[in-house]
Image (cartoon, rainbow, N blue to C red; front, side, top):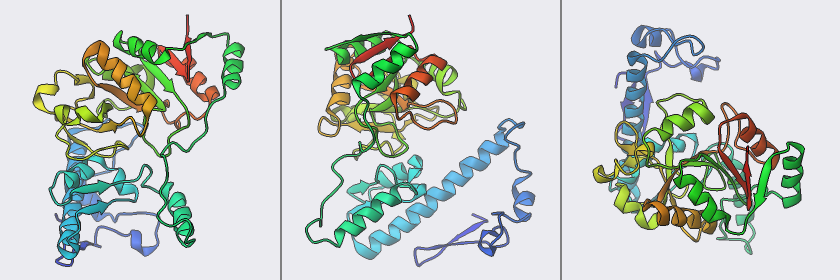
Length: 345
């Protein structure tokens, strides 16, 4: 690790010949970094080469080494069985997975929005902690965003002359659509807080086809092909499909897919045999839990490909208007807004 030095105190040091962000400049690195790693890639014109991939891989390994170094120090210092990770780096699922499966801790907690956006919630909790009547209260749910009203949705649908039907058994119908290979936009209840789709603002697809990830990427997400999709799975089947010792309710942990399961869910199995699962319980999200159960009844697979409900360089859809707009402009096959099933035919 030429750029870093691990210290006995549990800290790490940067070689300041390469880093200049501490000097108050806009740049992060000195010219020495170019001598070491080569010219930076022009993201508008240069494709990603093997050299670029090797640098990214090495940076990831260094990050994980530093994180485990810090965790070992904290474990030795405190003896705790529980670790709480926050800050933007806690969105690095591969690092989190290494920590979770290191055996250092029995419990790992990462909030749904560990980055800057979650600081507002943390500040509010800190404030309420000062009130003796509010002490030790926790956030009741990660679904803190807006909901959609029926009339609000149908008004937009009528304006766009889209075909729709109101269903009583829409969960079962959605599971059937998914089992037939349709890409489904799933807009339900209140929006989840944080950057991960947790079953209320999701684009869903059948994980059994190895071509499905390419199809969702090409027709909807329009992002780099090397980026894998996460999987939502019934928590009670977690250990049958993944080497995952902990729940992953916010899709923050990367782990290995068990070898016998890789052929069952190829659309969410990365090239290195890993996946970023989202474990779903009836208590946390009964509706999404029901959808996964219905899909399992049809396919014997308790998991779905799950990615955030947004297009390229766009935020996750928050309103029926934005969901319908993306549905029209993309190749999402079917859209469900609560119990309304919307098609383009």
